[in-house]
Image 1 (cartoon, rainbow, N blue to C red):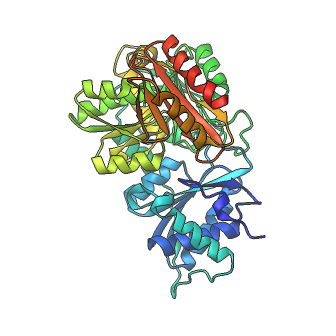
Image 2: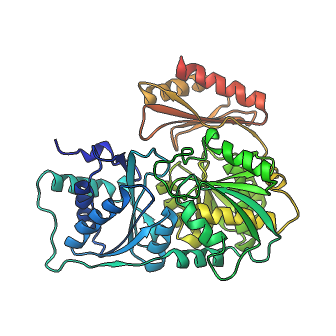
Image 3: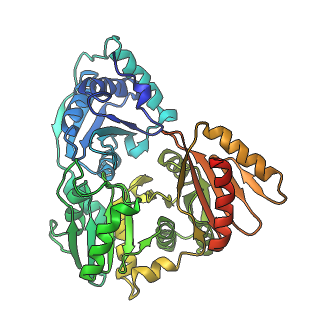
Length: 459
C-alpha cells in the first residue's frame, strides 16, 4: 500500500518514521511537487546528522531537478543555517530533520525565498496533495531541461554573518558549557563561537556531546525536558562555568542554565533579548506567543516597545512578525525569531545575545534572568483525552458562570482571573493531548487555577 502523506505531513512540516512512512520515493515526489506548486526554480537542500538524511536530500534533489529546478546542495546543516542560505541567496529551502524526535524518525522543513515559512495554509497542503498524486501513479513533473545540482559549503559564511549580528569580541572572558546533544550544535558552535575563524572570541567552551550521532546515545536532544539537561547542569557546576547552553537536534532552539545549574526560562530569555533589540531599535514591535509569561509584554512596553501577542507555532509568529515588521519574537518553547535573520528562528543568535548580555556586564546569568521573572509558572502540563475540543468547551462553560473572568479563543482557550492569574488550554497538533499552561502572581494562585482546570480535564 502506498504511503498516505496525510498521516505524517503536519501543520508546519513533515515528520514520520523512516522506512514505513518516509522513503526516498516519497521524498523524490515531494521534491517534484514542491517545484510544481511553488514555481521556485532554485532550492537549497540540507540535512542534519541522521543516517537517512543524505539519501533523502538526494532524492528530493532528484525530483526537484527533474521538474526543472536547480539545487544548491548544502550538506550538513542546522535548520537555522538553512534559513540563512534561503535568506542570503533568496532561494527556497528544504531541510531534512526531525529535530529532537527519536532516531527512527526523520522529517522535512521547507521555506520560500527569504526564509518565509511553508505550512499547511501556505502551500504545504498543496505540496502534500500533489506528491500523493505522484506516489499514486500520476506522472511526475518533468522539464524539457532538467535543473543542475551544485555543492557548496555555507558554514563559514553562516558563522561570519552571526558574528556580524552580535559582536562578542569585546565581552569579558566567559567559561561556558555547551551540550549539543549529539545534534547539529556540534557542527555549528565550533564555527561560530570556537576557533575555526581567524579571530578567536573570549570564550572558553567546555563541549558536551558534540559528536554528530542521529541515534542520540546520551540523551534525547530536547532541552525543554528536564531529564535532558541533567548532564549540562552537573557539568556547569563541576567546572565552575558562567553558564550553560543546550541545543536541540537541529539547533534551531537554545536553552540556558545559570552558573548554579538552574534553568533560565525561555520567557526570561525572550524579555532579555527584547530589551537588547529595543535598545537598538526604539519603539519597535516585539512578538510573543500567548503562553509566554505576562512579564514579557509588560517588560516590552516598559522599554518603549509595542508587544504583539500571537498563536503558538513558528508559522504563525513568523507571519505576524512580517506583517508588523517586528524586530524580535520569542516563544515559550525556546524558539527565538529575529528581523535581522529574515524573521526566522535561530538558537545560535539567541545564545549569542545571552553571552553578550552576561559578558558586557559584571552580573551573573542568574541575576540577569531573575530580573525578568515576575510571576509563578506551572510549566506545560499535558493530559491525554479522547476529545480535546469537548474538554475545552467543558472548561469554557465552567468559567462562563464565574463573574469577571476574561476569556479569548486566539489559540485554544485562555482564561484570565481578576487576581492576575491566567491559563491557556489548547489541543496538540499531532496527538490526542491537551496542553495546559498556567501562571499566577504567586505559587498558591497558580496552583488553585491549575488544579481547577485539571479537575475538569482529567475528570
